[in-house]
Image 1 (cartoon, rainbow, N blue to C red):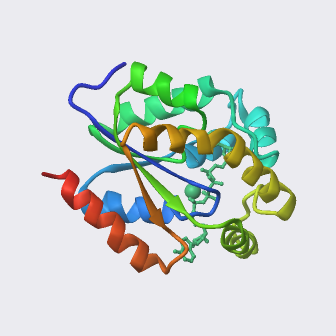
Image 2: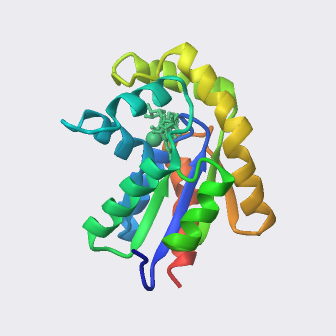
Image 3: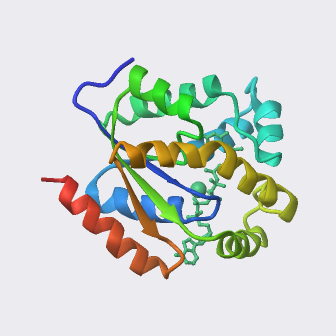
Length: 192
Ligand code: UP5
Ligand code: MG
């Protein structure tokens, strides 16, 4: 399955950077389909009869990256199901090979947006969310592991797209509306 004429924007950034918050707003305003790889994994984990439920549960709790075959299958199915050809892919690719594989097999990325905030800010957001989110990885042990995986495996993806001049970084330590003002400006330009 490959898509003709598709537009894909990767939305990256550390755990709690605001990928989901900003992607949801962008998708609504600019008529993209918002696909959060993490949300798709969490849905699959709770789907009755899923053969991957235990595996996903373990990787997420450990802050590790779920094997690519699982994630790419979920993304592809969601893309197909949507009937759209404009996608905000939130929280993916997690590694360089994942990005290469996706761009080869599914669709090249038009742009990468990197939401950036320091770990102190991220940690306090995630701990606060953890009071009510029910997410198995919103606890201090998992958060530390997620930070480590981000620095080791995912930051190189951002560096790669920066070098290719395809990545825009937004300071996401500011209030949601200020971050969004920058994000929407970038998308307004993409439309032309
Ligand atoms: N918030 C957001 N923006 C704010 C702002 N500007 N000011 C103040 N507060 C702000 O936001 C996080 C919290 O902060 C919320 O409470 C929000 O209200 C507040 P959110 O928009 O949810 O940030 P996001 O970047 O989406 O954080 P998330 O926790 O989802 O990031 P992760 O990257 O950790 O989580 P994800 O769901 O992408 O992945 C989870 C796990 O799944 C990974 O660790 C990994 O194990 C697995 N995974 C894979 O293996 N492969 C994949 O491809 C994807 C995920
Ligand atoms: Mg998210």
